[in-house]
Image 1: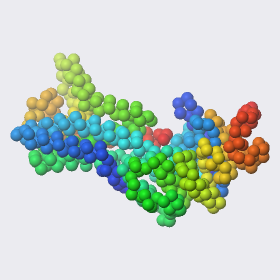
Image 2: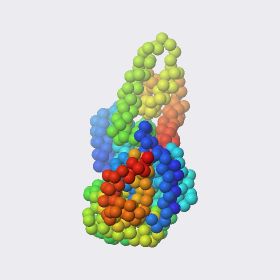
Image 3: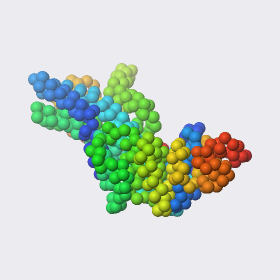
Image 4: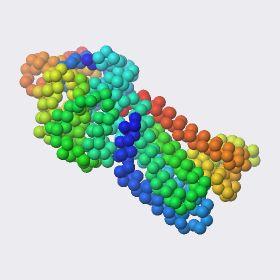
Length: 255
Length: 241
């Protein structure tokens, strides 16, 4: 397993897309942080950039990489390697490479220019998003046989969580505004990793209450500490569940 | 050495393999022949455990394929399409496989040297032509001295010199008592290699016969003529009825 991860990394760290990804993140991070005088404003902008870019890039890149590796995965599976080992190693390699990219692109500027607890939570949530959406990419790869359909599904998944979900949430809040829906709403939010990541960061910023319904709700119901633990637990599940399903399905997949 | 019993596999409504039973013995070199979509690759992939059959049992040296992946250490597989991680060099790919196969300490590097791989080992996989990639695949199939070779279209895309080199290697391994399974569309390439022919059509086994026997019954000398003769005549129809 270590061998496969090592060589996947070796391949990916020379991949042009990854290098461009690092570069774009770094440029955005440095410019946003140095432009705004207020540090929490800068972090908020960076949070929005993270929430927008990380999910779509992670899932798209990972999906394409997995589908392009099908033939090589076949070749390796013709060796005495268990399917579970194979798929977990592929995931680990890609997730690791994307995480390094995020840490270098956003992490370095943030730590150098704007070090605080809130900045660290931003990095943690960015890493979680990377791991979650790479896991979702793995699921897409296992469920679809056709590359084009897989990429389509990956785009739809990313758009669903970054754009569509909030729309649904708003219409839910709007249509049930006469009822006490705060608690169901909390459950609802847990269904979206992007919202979880946002809340996780906002809980550390003083502006949480001003950042709309979901942030205020979490703070009121749970306070920062329990709220943070809850979001981390949910995000961890968002990694584990897609991966567990992928491993199960991959064991029976025809290559 | 390999025994296949009542193997059936379908993709949706399409039956790729329909109740196939075969036995392959050590020292034989078996050509899988049939039109496109006849189930050759599916059969090969089933043996490798890449495709999971619906019904039927495959045994390799009396060990069932389903239960354990260790049997694959005895198989050298050369895929039809070799695609490798783009930014890895040839040397890295070969080293990666060597590191994965820690169970082997001595390697068969005859093909690696024959194809002149050491001279180009720092080239990335992306920059290679289809034929060179094919050479890498061939090297990897032979590298760990397996007892069984499964070669899917091995000579497709190779230049004549390399193709002859590979064929020579196949003949040599067969003489060493190894079992060789080959699919190919280029029947003339299989001429000197093959001892038996398996003919598949629409997922059904049409026949499994020795080459000598086929040559005798059709009166032809060359394998491609033999097969053409069989396909044109009512040989297959008679078999089915």
